[in-house]
Each structure stands twice: as structure tokens, then as C-alpha cells.
Length: 287
Image 1 (cartoon, helix red, strand yellow):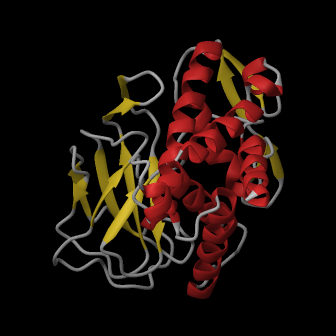
Image 2 (image 1 turned 135 degrees about the vertical axis):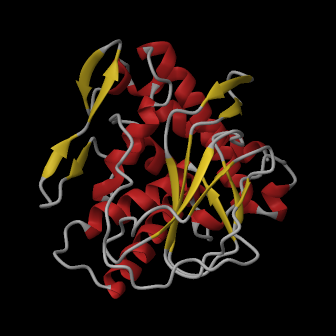
């Protein structure tokens, strides 16, 4: 148990020493190597900061390079129950959710979502859950496949598997994040531990966003956009990589000014990364 706590604390603490703004580009082709999702029962799921309602959920085919292959297959609006597409997923696909509102745990108020969250799947799926953590997996795959001149289907599968393993390990869950429906019920700490852990992490991220907004103003989701950019090199370290593999320093906006990774929040660690790690661990232990 102590080892698991330390793994989680280290992962979250490392994540919070950096930030950078901006959603990533959904455009691109890539080589499609599976047929389009076929009309059928339809994939269902939901997007979470808290449950996001009124957002735009978009389903894409995905090519071997990890980018979207062609135009969107379908777009629907999320509601209190999540989303439901008329198309099913039969191969590599991505679901992205933009906009909408959600009840924020830390403020107990409705907040407008300004960050694009995505989930990437490599094979047939009937349910997909979109969270910041599924977004980290997606961001890693995108960035890592850009390093290859002509990625193959095998490259895509390997990159997705490695990204899933990395993020599962960071959050101490056993199930790929796109398949985990967050739970906020204490009973699930025992009955469905992966679901409860993801719910707990979402609650802690809610506190992070509140803390960031109090210190920096502007867009409350700026720090989350940052982390989605930062993880492309598979490390939360204030840096990311470009298509050549060269390291670039991530930036973020605080009080209207551009700052750089490693100085996030302009505050000491106790009020930043360590406090965040403690909040997540305490929430899980409260079970």
C-alpha cells in the first residue's frame, strides 16, 4: 500500500510542476487501415471533468499515424447521461468532446468546459469514457507517432499499448482509461476500485483548477491544457517534443503573461504539486 501511494504521489507531483496552453489539432489524415465505424447499435459513453452536459462529442476514424483519418464520422451532443452515437466502433477511433458545462466539485458550481478532451481506442468498443487521463494517453500516441516517418499499424498498436500502460501505472489502475467510468460512490472504493480512483483523481483535478484560477486568473482550464501538451514526451517535466524529437519548453499563461514550465503557479511546491498529490491520496483513503 505504501508503494502504491508513493507511485501515485510521484506521478501527480511531477505532473504539476509544469503547464502549457492550447488544445491540439484534430486535423490530419494518416493512413487508414480499418473500415469506417459501421452503423449499428452505436457506441455510448460520457465525458468527465464532472459529467459534461451540452458538449459536442465527435467520432473519428484514426490512421496509422494516430491522426484523424478523414472527416468526422458523427457528431452528437452530450447530456446528463453522456453521449450515444448511431455508429459503432469497429477499429481504431477517437472520440473528442468540446464545450459543455459540468458541476465542479471544488466550487460546487456549474463551470463551462474550455478544454478539448479525447479518448483513443485501438479496436472495437461499445463504451468509451473521456477524461483528462484518457486525454493523456491520446496525447502521448499522437506525439510519439509523429517521430516516425511512415508509421505502420503495428507502430500504432505498440504506441497505444505503451501509452495505456504508462498512464495506468501513473494512476495505479488496471484498466485502460478509456474503458473506466468514473465513480464518486465511496462503496466503489472496494467494489470497483479503478472507477473510484478515477473519480477521486477528477475531484483532485477540480481542486487544482480552482487553485490555478485563484493564482493566475483567465481560463481555469489552462493548466489542464498544459498537462495535455506536456505529456507528449511521456514525462510530466515542463517540456514536450516536436516532430523531430527535439525538446521544447511548454508555456502557460498566468495573470496575462507567458510563463514557462517549471515555474507554474509562481508558488512553492507545498501549494502546488505536493498538495495536489496529497489531495488525491487522501480522497482515495477516505473511501
